[in-house]
Image 1 (cartoon, one colour):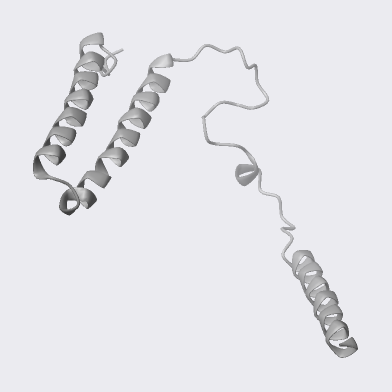
Image 2 (cartoon, one colour; image 1 turned 45 degrees about the vertical axis):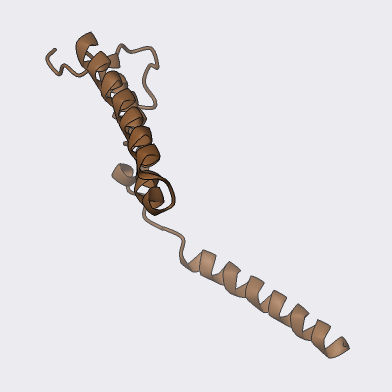
Length: 117
């Protein structure tokens, strides 16, 4: 029993030393200004946070997320075709697609999908 606990302790110490050495060797020594700057939203992080921006791009992103999530809800319909009655499957799919099309028509009618400025 003492031999097993010594082996576990040795493995723990050895793995800690290896992780410490690998973290020291993998440190980036050259700091690149381009790679250090954030680029996700296009705004300067050190500038003023109160600059005006177009809400249209954020609205398009939200609409994309909504329709993307709804498509992932449509995918299980294909899987359950053999597990349900065909009438129930068609009615569920048609109802869901009808809701999707009604939402798309509403967004189109409101001008949210218009790209002209």
